[in-house]
Image (tube, rainbow, N blue to C red; front, side, top):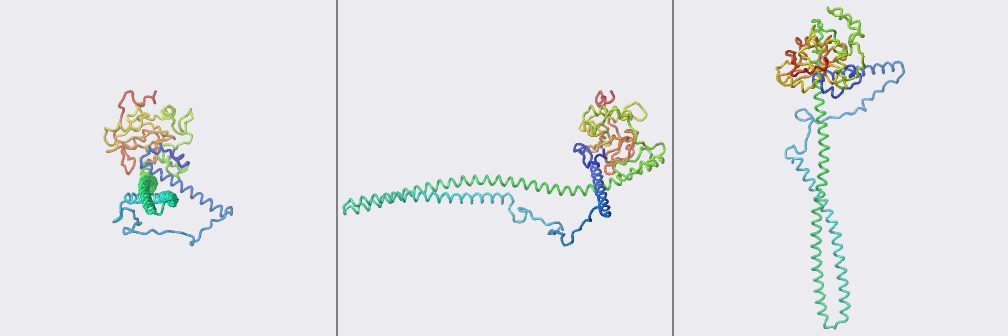
Length: 433
């Protein structure tokens, strides 16, 4: 399973969700180690090709072409940052934004209102100028008909008519101004909401950018934390390896997380030194009468896999007996496992058949919460995926080993009390029918 992950440099998200934090960190370390190995291998090939003249040498850029930037440092030694709205005397960002939107809407509406008023004023002026000219022409025509003594009366009439037209013009202007004012207010509201929607959209984009920057910052912090945990995992790996050799309870050292592993001759010499063991053969394993898929596809396929491959290896049985181990469970979910362990003390555990990989999941009760460790059984051995570097000949060997040895240094998990069945029939009855 691990070799396939390192070959493809990809892990299924559902399988990744089943890994604990320690397993994720070690898996990340191994994937990074595989990337470095491939890079060094490619560099070696390039150097060899250049030496034989098959490929031109790489031209390094001169120092003059190098570009760099220098950030302004603050009093705390970190990059100096000023956030608008958070400085002394700054208005809140929301208040500044609201004022800018309102001002833009007001200016736009005022500009449109002035244009409308110029058009309206031109219409009013033309209308009354033409009317007054017509009326003057009519009066002038009548003047020639009146007597000289009536000129004074004609003048008075002209002034009265002029005043009447002026009054009507003023009323028309007031009505026009009121109409323009109402249109200006309506337009200001429309522009306000348009700009408000644009601002919200812009804020959403800025929020996504801030979230991305925060995610980048957290990713860098997580990388540093993973490096520290990977170092602890390497120390733990060496401790487990030495302890396993001393005890002589394992079937062989795992090459699952060792890129530079031992060859077959070294492995044979190691088994020769361990009493009661024999070197593994690549041909050993269950006599499969079926083609196993790359990963479990359904419960029916998992049940068949268990009967075809695991029953012959006495998976789930107590050592040297025909009794099923009290810690063994069938195909149950993570939630069901945690429900069974809920009322038990720290150190309680159970082993359930996994639906994610060809193997099992060890569910462990903490003082507060739970941990779940994947057990890889896809080969001819049993080992924790990414945590325990040891290979165990049987599933019972793995459980008994960690009753005396902790699983991880950081967690100190020691298997103490097995969690048995609660219902009848037991949840594993389909596996043994």
